[in-house]
Length: 266
Image (cartoon, rainbow, N blue to C red; front, top):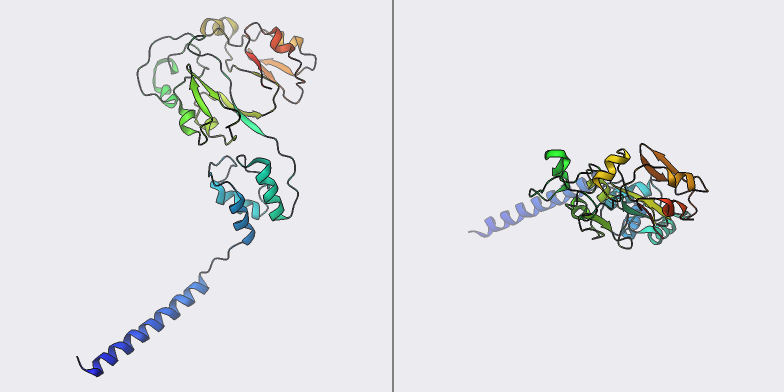
């Protein structure tokens, strides 16, 4: 190749390089996305679990909402108060009080206390029970099926099936709500961590039906409500419920419950 050809090729490459550089520079300016420094700082302060327990699509979604003032600084259930305080400092606001919550499984009908209508050998997934007779082998149609859909959904290893019933490790639970979403029986809810007494049953069947299906099911007798001095217990649809704001933790309801399905949580 002649010297002229080499110089020509070099010039062409140089011109093309300059053109591409100018084009990319202009494109970078035109399509630049401004980064919110506070949003980036909030995202860095979040734990990064991306569990969705805050109601947003992962930590980045929550960080964007906090930066815009659309979500409270203490909205992360995993980080709790410590993370809320860090984010409050970034946003220049007060963190405010946040109530710690924990998942609770409203069922005690394990393999020893509940009756089975038949033996089941199919897929070990609670969500599949809608396709089998009676909604599952347990006689109680409201009881925990014990096949671990909630266990698979929990990103913190905070819930396990013990003798046929899901049990929550209160110290590991971050109240992300994944288990609540996964339970097809709607047995799991988020309650205050310092709740004093809870009703560990979800059955709304009449007393005789519940007694036939489970030894520890709520029969709606009303003894708990009649003996509660603070009127914190209400029986509706053959099922007792405790108002945690009214409950003083006296234990009268648990003492009077003939099925012992009201438990202390402190």
